Image 1: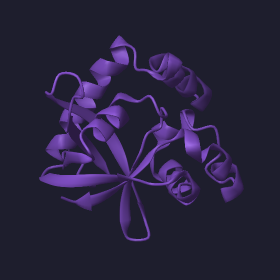
Image 2: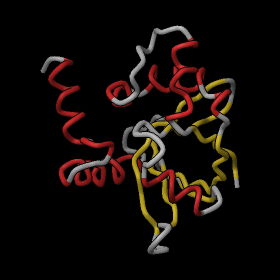
Image 3: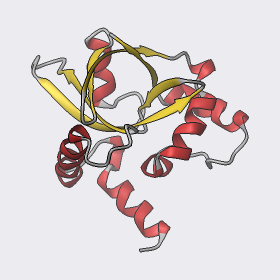
Image 4: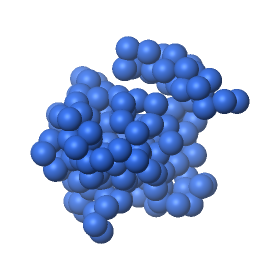
Length: 158
């Protein structure tokens, strides 16, 4: 399948910046696979956080971007992503699962510091390339222009 077809499919799955029914089902499968550590890299994780409305644990499959010895989670769908809202409501308290379970604190990175993290994220997350409108090889200035639209969280041990 050509990259353009994959991009169209990905955009359809997340039309309006939100996953449709099929995307939610696919995300549930990936969350299970990532949590089990089946792929074994530690880069693909399942974020578990308390839902802001229900109080129940909600899981999301994510890709970890590593930079300068730190780990980061990036919201490829932007500010209105459910996991971002839930993390903010939970005061940054969450759990990462990737074959093991790690209680973490997610600290939001200021927009002025996000550009190099966003670039690294695109280098390690092919799925993110469809949603973040900058080429992964672009100069940092291009990432700086869009950084405020894409929340980034530093992962620290709880």
